[in-house]
Image (cartoon, rainbow, N blue to C red; front, side):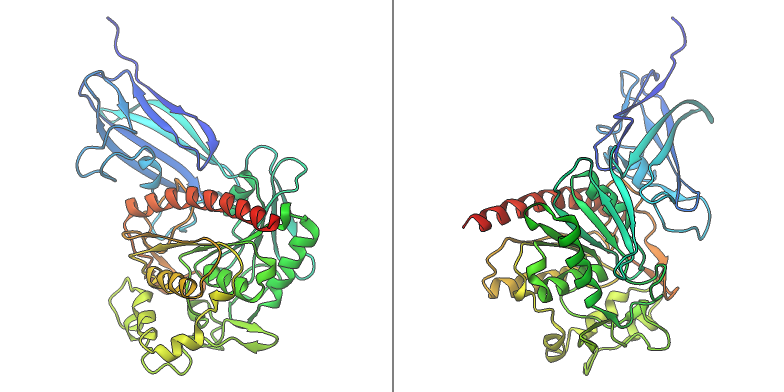
Length: 441
């Protein structure tokens, strides 16, 4: 009998990033201990890697969907994509960017099998954000700065406005995946992008009103359906926009959002300070929770041990009920379904508590549309897309440069990434059905 020839099998080998994969190894000796390694170039060509040891079953096989690594490895328990989310950058201080440098670009991961310190098999796993036929257009009109991602086919398509958080820029990856799932997605920058301010300070809401008008006019979305999907400060903004421009917005998706208007915080213009205004409307600042607040203090953030938790300072601001009420986003004005995705170990701000505040206010108001909060008790602030690395919990803020932790645990964050995205797609389908029923009556 000849020597066993091991091989790695990935099914499907090439698919959208949200498609479940099966990673198996065949041709091992029964009970043999081997190492599986994954390596991906991410961001500005930074290699990320995970190396995990497994023991083959009695048939000489490995199936990551059924078998856990050995004790003490990069992750514990059964996780079909643990080799991906457990990756860490090989360069100290490397960028946290987990997507490709090219907007919406595919990620190519080399899987290798090592026995006795030598590679003996390999395979490639491709994660795509843009499905075949998806198109990208840069938008630089009417003062707007962003990227429009369009699904294949003539449409009309339902639409989504995609808003980033306090890091600014354009959320190409989420918009590309929305388009791959049938939505015309406008990833809109509102600071820290070409032609815009470097800071969130004094951002006019009229800019977003222009974007919403443009989407309705130029995209002619199916049944007039335009959802807003925002992350962190973008989640705060999504709720704020839906409360101010209710007739333009058909559904709200808030990833780790706020229930109150916040000051400029870490994304502020240093000349105006972190307690300066983030949002303006009709030239007037929108009151934020730090204004006239009797109990708010930055001390837990400024003086705590590193990596610091920004959320501890923001919790102090919620102790002043009057200031909270002045700054509360009037979500009862929203005329659409609302989905909130929150994190119980959020190191950036108390998103679980904020989510409960929003839900309670909507219930009190008798909100006639579906409302859901999905909370991930052990997850942190960085809930993104499925099957990306979740190990970088400490980071330097992209604007202020200050070190902090987003909170959570890598495995809990990975599970939140996976579950949240499938929940968003289901929510948007239901929101479209609810809109159709509402229009019929």
